[in-house]
Image 1 (cartoon, one colour):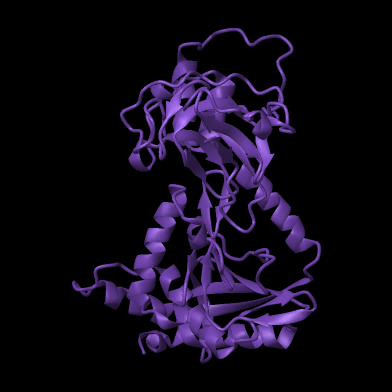
Image 2 (cartoon, helix red, strand yellow):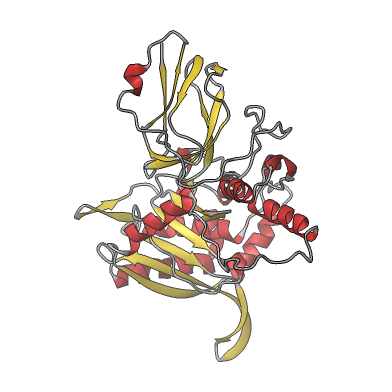
Length: 401
């Protein structure tokens, strides 16, 4: 019997997907479980598997084509099966407008379990290679499992450019380049408009003395039995979860004229990936120990950067934290996710002089900025939440109870 291959829906926010590469061609025989194509979604690059056996009779969406969730991509059937009914009303072959022809697939030892000829690469790296006419098999990947990243393509191009040193620059060469947004960047753009336009943000900033928290981290990490080393962010995640438990009105969202109060604390942790941002979720943070949070956070972050998260691992959060301290950012304002009522922006821990009891002392200080949805949270509520968080971080023994 014929089988339809459709664009899958892998998250609540996903509305469309892009065909990066077909690993089978029309006329190829496939078995259930065979990898048919590479698909770029709003969150990750995934492989699309066949759910039935037969011949790949018809491909309806070409490489580079972006189509809505649920649209027919291809048909698998036996040679004598009638597929005219499935093709009736199907759109013409969808491809990317003016997209360069992709390089022919070549065998790669680092396929990560995919079909022969599949070279693991991020969507941005794959697009860069296609635009430049580069065979990805010639590029050495530095990502997990040999995955080719944007920096790897840039390094390859730089090496090739050395052979062209001294060559004339073409007359009339453009001084700019227009690059198509990746699927994940398009999703981010759409969600930012959904957030900033209808949600009336207001922000509150507090400065926290992190001396005691840093000492706690140092002491716990010195324990040999502590298998997972704690980061400052792990401590902030746990402290924020406790503050939300004590101020449940912040663990909420606006929902069609009503306030939706979440009964559990599922913490979204913003992670920068190569061409955008993804927010994996640590569930029930207020009930987990620091060690459990550290282990889960590290695993989620590593898989987020490798684009290997499952849909349930980046959905269902009730609050989010964005930390740019590692980039020496002292203070910033984050944008609230439309599904949340607030977000916490975390700055760098600084050594700075402060006045203590009439004396000047050098202390480790950090700024926290909460952005709140003014439809459900007022200034005093947001301030009390941050005050609670400040107290927990400055007396972090509470995190061990």
